[in-house]
Image (cartoon, rainbow, N blue to C red; front, side, top):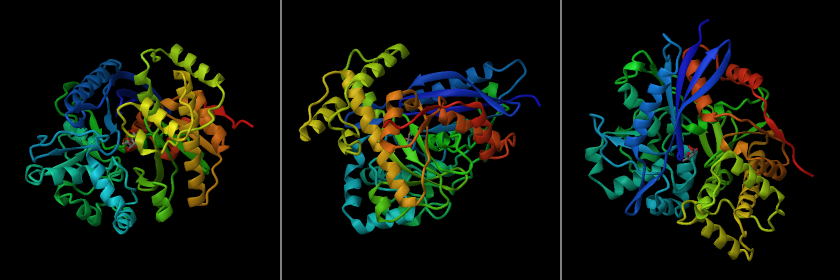
Length: 476
Ligand code: LRH
């Protein structure tokens, strides 16, 4: 059979990429054709995304993707995944009627406090949606937009979450995708449609949303890019984390817990049922859904955002691979920190200075801040390792499952200090895979929609044969 070519558009909060996947002889090979930085922009008191420039980068990437193919070949499909929870408000003509806020904007704080302070409502919303009250949820963002700009309910007719919005720009079809819908705190945890209870509580107009389309739905041909006129837009799981989990070469018999390690550390597993109740709520378990409809209980641990933002305070920050390796080596030779930071402290969500926030956190615990960058690197990796282990422990208690391995993908899988710290703290071997998890999961879902691959289990089996992990065994 001749090879099949697909393009994955994978947009993260700090960088985006377009990757071409070639499916040939039951194997996937990938080529990154375009990579670009992404960042939050502050204007006045608020934080936004530059959607226009992201769209320009997507177009550039797709043009490069088409140009990268052998003569006469075409891209069969394209799929888009993005970071979670952010969205675009549009009118019927598809015009943006409200700026696209970035999820770290502090505008949701009052709404969050109000729900956290009303125990009955908090429990009710968790029982209805399976999503805990976290500052960045789409629900709090939409509630704030409606409360502070009441005229928006006349101006906007549709709410598209970011992957839905890019699918719309590509295909001309306005849809809401299922996997991304499940992260919003507005979807019914027991069904496949929006939760009336949550929409009412957050005062989100139900007409802004339509019943989520199934993963794998074909949304039509790409419009406005002549090189892709024959390319079909496929609704992959639009949430980057869902795609990253789909790329985990998991053992078919189970026993794996997943860690997608990047700006966030996303620790979770796949389950037939949601994990609900007061303890799960207190542990901030999010019952996101896979593209197949199953549950993906997960906890968001703050992740390498801690490091990315701490580096802002160090002009000598590493940029080249060699410099990263030297920093990790220097950090590994330091003695283990006497006091770890509690990575769940909300003070780390979006401080003006992360280094100052870490120093203040340590001083409040009567511990000394590190003296140099390597010390922060060591402290952050060990603290994140402990944060990962705490979540794994809670999941074993909640689910009654015993996990045998941690499967790790994402940028953090390249950081041996972080991998080892996770193995040591959890007592489980960490299998770290060097792969662009979200893009690979995105491509897998396109191949399944195109019927080139039977199902996700078959894809994962083929991936397991191709990949060799680095295994970190727990010390001691
Ligand atoms: C990671 C991620 C994560 C959260 C956050 C807002 O990119 O998608 O799962 O939802 O962004």
